[in-house]
Image 1: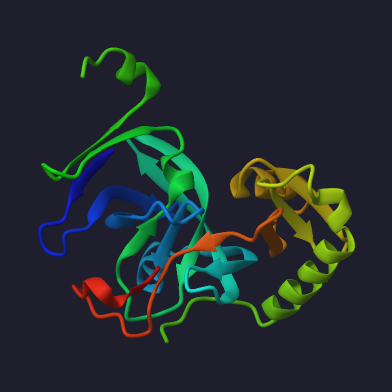
Image 2: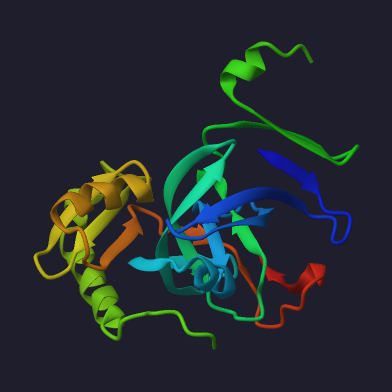
Length: 132
Length: 96
């Protein structure tokens, strides 16, 4: 998984491929460890790939307000492996940036070097071969 | 608002789903806290899984096309979102 600190806004980002089966596109998503879910996508990305509504759910936003989120069935391709997830829709149509949450990163160990602005993801197998 | 196809009955799905969850709460909590439940609101059938995707996949075997109500068991799921004042490149425009 390619991850980096974006020089433009200073935030950690990951590069992902998303698809609904027909169309595939590459996106950059903000890494957010305060987000329980897998991935939240902009309306524009959902329209682009032609994603279909799958579920609805109640959530609590980080400001304490509760609300509804619409979830769409989306395939995410990470390191060449396709995974089907339920991606939440970001309702604010001004937003173009996706948000990647804890669930998406759960198969990995992340090493975040804040000093040198580097992020690396490893599988447990890869991690055993690395000497820090 | 750009057009994404959201059926009109989704608010009803959320309302019924919430009611079913509350009526069966003792079946879900605390034994399954941290897991997810997918509820088919017409039948009231519920499917528990370790993740959102697992609960939905189980439900899809019986209900391949229905819009399901899904929530985290126990404390409700916390998600981040951009504020209504979001402008690309504005670091302070997200709600934490």
